[in-house]
Structures are given as structure tokens and as C-alpha cells.
Length: 199
Image (cartoon, rainbow, N blue to C red; front, side, top):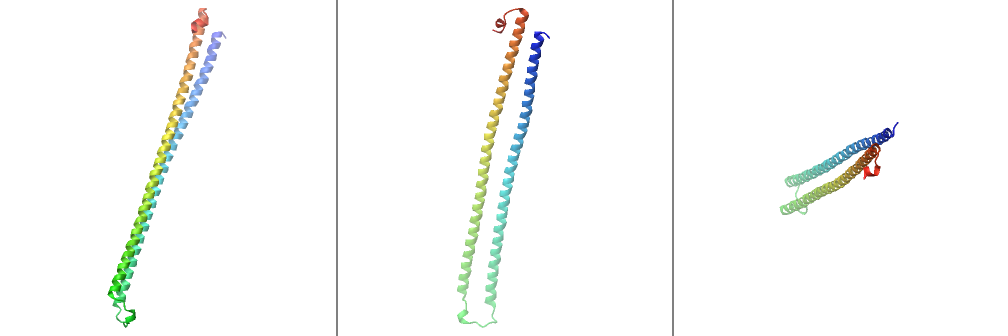
């Protein structure tokens, strides 16, 4: 094997190793990109699940409030029916010490209305507070996810740029080496000093 063939053989071995390394890096980059895409997809799915859960909680709370309102209505109807039955029960003797005047009945009804109104106001305030809490949690979660995604994207972008810079520098080193090897080869063939050819 001549010196030229030995040089070509060494160069081919180095170039094959470099190409294999590039192929390995490309494969690893493809796997990492796939993993990153899956991670983003999982994050988006988790965000959707959180919104669905918040919506379900709001709906359950709405059902609970409606049920309480219906129970209050039924209780008021029962109370009203009891008053009507008591007022229409003429089969019993009327004792003056147990007699309830119409004014007292009206006052009692008025107090009941005030009490029911207060309960409904309290329920409405509770529902509003719960809704605001869910909205706030959704906004905070969305802001955090956005910040995390931006941070991860910036890191991935910088890593990608660094990888490209490293590959570019490696290609330049290989290119320079190839040029030097060719100049040395020409110097050997022409009989000139190799420093003159590479200078």
C-alpha cells in the first residue's frame, strides 16, 4: 500500500466515523424531537383535563344550589300550607290565650321572606366566590403553563443552535484537514515543500 493509499484509507476511516457520528446525532435528535412533541401534547391534554374538571365542579355546585333553592321553596310551601290549615281549622274551640292574630301571621311571613332572601343571597355569594376561585386557578395555571412552555422552547432553541454551531465547526475542521491533506499530497507529487503549499 502506497503512502497516498494509506492517507486515503485513514481519511476514509475518519470520514466514515464522522458520518456515523452525524447519523447517530440525527437519530438522537429525531428521538428527542418526538419526545418533546409528546411532552407538549401531554401538557395540552392535562390542561384540557383541568378545564373539564373545573367545569364539572362548577356544574355540580350549580346543581347543589338549585337543589337548595328547591328545598327552600318546598319548605316555604309547607309553612304556608300549615298556616292555611291552621287558619281554616274551625272545628276546634278558639282559646284566646293561643289565638294568633293576622298581624302576627303577616309579621311571621315577612320574617320568613327576609330569612329566605338572606339564605339565597348567601348561596349566590358562595357560588360567585367559588366561580371566581376556579377562574383564578385557571388563569394561574394557564400563565404557569405558558411560562414553562416558553422557557422550555427557549432552552430547546438554544440547544439546537449550539448543536448546529458544533456541527458547523466540526465540518470546518474536517474541511480544513481535507484541504491540508490535498496540499500535502500535491506537495509530495510536485516535490515542493509542504509548508509552501499549505501556506
